Image (cartoon, rainbow, N blue to C red; front, side, top):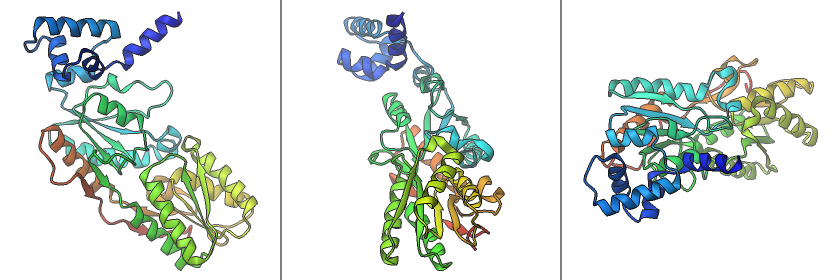
Length: 344
C-alpha cells in the first residue's frame, strides 16, 4: 500500500521538465514527443516515452493548455493561509485584487481563476489550466512560484519575492507605507511602538521591519517586534497582543501589520482593561473590510489595489504574448493613509 501511495505522489510531482532532464532533451521536445504534435526522431521519442513511463508521468491540465495554447485563463494565487485570506473579510485583500484583475482580464478576452491557498487537502496547481499566473506577496521559497517555474508558466508577482530577482513584479512600496504609518503614530504622541508581523519572509514584512528599527532608533526606544504564525489569523493576533502587554508595560501604539492580526489586537487591548486609542493606538496596513468594520475602525493604508491589479495583468499578458516588458517591475500608486478612530 505504501508503494502505491508513493507512486501516486510521484505522478503528481513529475513534470515535463523532469522528463526533459532525464532524457537530456529540451522540454519542447518532450511535449512534441508525448503529444505527437510535431515530428521527433523515433529513437528520441521512444527514449522520452520510456522515461515518462518510469517516472509515472500523467499529462495534466497545465500541460494540455501549453500544448493547445487555448487556456485563455490566468490564475490569481496566494500562499497566505485561510486564517488570513478568509474569515470575516471574505478574502478582503485577495478579493479586491481579484475583482480588478478579473475586470481587466475579461476586457482582454481572458478568464481569471482564483486558486485556493496551498494548504493540506487543497488541489495541486497541476489541476488548473492556465496561460500564466499572478502570485500575491510570495515568501522566500514560495511553493506556488516553484511550481509555476517547473511548468514554465509566465508569472508576475504582486509584491517582490525575496530573492526572486528574475520574476517581474509590482512594487507595493512597503517602505513608504511603513513610513506613513510610523510617522502618523509618532505625530499622534506615541513613544513606544510595537510591531506585529507574520513569520514568513515576505518583502513587505522585511522592509517594514527595517523602517521600524530605524524609527525606534530615532526615538531612542527599544524595538518590540512580535512575529506571528499567519495561519493563526485573528486569534493569533489576540494571543500575541495579550502576551506583549503582559511583558511590556509602556507600549502606547501597535502597528499590527496584517488586518486579521489587528482586529485580534484591538480585542486583546479591550480585554486587558485598556482603551483604543486612549491607552494604545492601533494601525494596520490594508484598508479593507476588517479595518473599516472594527470597533473602533482601524487606521489603515489605501494601497491602490485596483491599479496594482491592472498593472500586474498587463505585465503578465506581455509575458504570455512573448513581448519583453520595458521594465521588470512597476510601481504601485503612492500609498495613502486613512486615519480612523483606532489612532486619533
